[in-house]
Image (cartoon, rainbow, N blue to C red):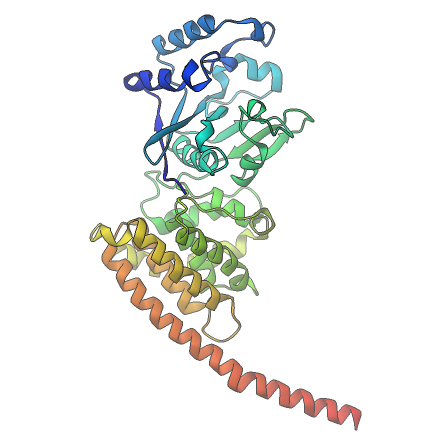
Length: 398
C-alpha cells in the first residue's frame, strides 16, 4: 500500500494547485469552485476561464481551502476542506445551522492511477486529524448516495465517511448531510499527558453508551500508538465481564494492519459499533492512569530507527500474537499481554525506540504467562470440569 501524506494548500504552493487542476489531468474546467458559486443555476454553463478567475480571486483574498494528497511522495489528489459557513450555498441547500468551528469536506479528487487503493480514505483520515488541530469541532460532508461512477464521486463515497465515523444528520435519498463530531483534542495544551487525554476522551463523551468507534473518533491522531494504548489498557484492566475478549478483536485487526503497512487504523462496522457503558470504561482507564504516568516519566525520543516502517511491521506481528492470547480463556491471559501492548504503545507515541525494545521483552514474558494460564486450563481446569460433569450426569442417570 502506498504511503499517503497530505499538505495544506498555502500561498507558497498555489502552483501545485495548477498542476493538479489542468487539462492534462482532465480537471481543467472546475478549479474546485463549485461550492463557492452562490447558486447551482447556470453552473454547467460556466466556462473554465470563469472558474479559473474565481479561483484566482480566492487566492488573492487569502482563501486556501484544501489539501494536496501524495502517495509515495507523488501528487495523487486533492481534498477541498474549509470553514463551512464561508459557503452561502450550504445554508441554502442543506439548512445547516451556523457554527464558527464547523468545517466541511467539499471535494475529493484522486487521480486515476491511485484510485481503488485506499488513498482517498487514508487522506481523509489524516485531514480529519489536521482539521482538529485547526480548531474544528465538527466536519460536514455531502456525498451522493449510491454513486459508483468517478464523475459522481467528487464529494467522496458515503462508505468512506461511514468508516471514518461520520453519521447522517439530515437524510436524503440523493445527497445526505453527514457530520463527524470532534469532541476531544488530544494535543490540547490542557492535556499535559497521554494518560490525561485518554481519561478526557471518555469523560467528555456526551452520551452514556459509548461505541468502539466513538473511542477511536475521540483520538486526536489516527495513529496506531493511541488506539493500541487505549485497547491495551481496556484488555489489561477489564472490569466489565467479557470486555477483554471483545477488545482483543480490534487489537487483532490493528496487528494485521500494522503488519500490512497501513498508516491508519480501521475497524469494520460490525465491530466498531459495539457499545459499553461510559462509566465502566472510564473506571477501567482510571485504574491504569498511575502506571501510565510512570511510563510517561521515563519516555523520551531515542533509537527511533526501531520504530520505522519495518519496525512497525514486526511490532504488528507481535501485537497480533498478544491479541490472540488475550482472546483466549484462562487466568493471566489478558492482563500481562494487555500491559505489554499498552507499554509499547506509549513508547511508540513518544518515539522511544529503547522502551519499544523493552516492551518486546515484556511481551515475551507476557506470552509465557499466557502460556502457563492456558496450560493450567487445559491440564487442570478442563479435566476437573469434565470429571465433575460426568459425575453429576451419572448420579442423575443412575
